[in-house]
Image (tube, rainbow, N blue to C red; front, side):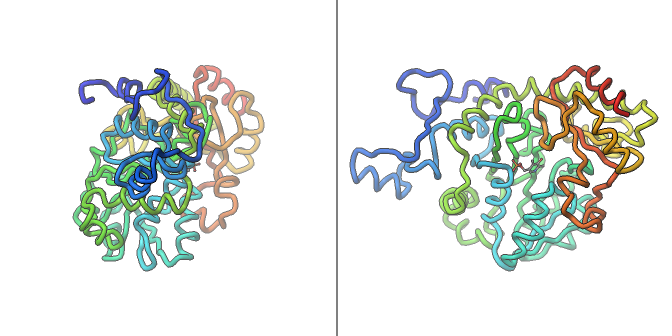
Amino acid sequence: MDEISFDGKILHTPFAKPDAYGALSMPVYQNAAYEFESAEQMELAFTGKVSDHTYSRITNPTVQNFEDRVKNITGSFGVTAMNSGMAAISNAIITLAQTGSNIVTSRHLFGNTYSFFASTLAAFGVETRFCDLTNSYEVESHIDANTCAVFLEIITNPQMEVVDLKVLSEITKKNGVPLIADTTIVPFCNFKAKNWGINIEIVSSTKYISGGATSLGGLIIDYANFDWLSSPKLHNFAKEFGMAAFTTKLRKEIHRNLGAYMSPQVAYLQSLGLETLSIRYDRATDTCKKLVEKLETLSEIESVNYTGLNSNKYFQLSLIQFGDRPGAMFTINLASREACFRFMNKLKIVKRATNLFDNKTLSIHPASTIFGTFTPEVRKEMNVSDKTIRFSVGLEDVNDLFNDIKKAL
Ligand SMILES: *Cc1c(COP(=O)(O)O)cnc(C)c1O
């Protein structure tokens, strides 16, 4: 469907089979199991000789249609929908990691991702090597024969750091290591992972895609652009499955055994969310840009951090990689932790809540919440400051948001 637009692809990805009643939207197949006409048919399905659904932990028609739409708009080889962003990250990493492997990443990570690497995986003998991903020399010196992946977030939260993907992907390619990117902050309509040397893309679809924070979800997107013969764990698999080795290992083993597949009801909600992704994203990012420009003029605010601002350190790189809409998340710094709390308690329209890209604008003090159980030393290493408030811009009018923030200051 190359000739049709991004939104056209979302709206017109065909069902795998014609619906018996001609339903226009994909029905919710809210069932666990599927009936077979014969024992022979059953054998073919269970041994993977035909692609019929057998059990909804493994595949489901409603979830598959959501996956097909994402596949269509990303031009990817394989899409696996999970029941949260964390399920997507853990399933993707477990597909590649084994005892003795290491992962090279930055300390600038989403809180649970950091904890998954530093604690959960460490307990299974998988080492995580934290380094400055913006420094090519450091990255290269941390990679060795046991490195199973380089992992990054394309705009880190809440530091708002941007790595030069062209430089990083050249390093990973040269060293035969897959590059895994969490692209949650800038969705498919504005960022094409495939064009930046990313091999596996991870998205928390809880955020932009769900369409107003209706549900949790995660996506593992495989571009089949990596030679898995150089992966320590998938080497033998790659001899049989070639470029499909990652998705085959994930779909035939890891995700079945871990059991975190997206549920049909959620796939329905997120398919609907996907249909309005571009218009919601355009609106929220327009508002975000106007809002940060207004906030920069207020003397009560020490600094405004958004990569779409001319004054931002990453402005040029962000423009090249994400265009003029680098997400609808920004942070501000106030004088102290106390000033942040006082300010947040006075907000009337902006909600105090975690999550990103709800239809409503949200604010959170990351140091005392998402990173609240980390030691001050770890927070310092992660560059999570006590003075920072994070905002996620929703669909309200920009003046309503500006006035609410101005009054609270
Ligand atoms: C929210 C988020 C996650 C985790 O996603 P869940 O759906 O909450 O499990 C991972 N990475 C980033 C960048 C996120 O914002």
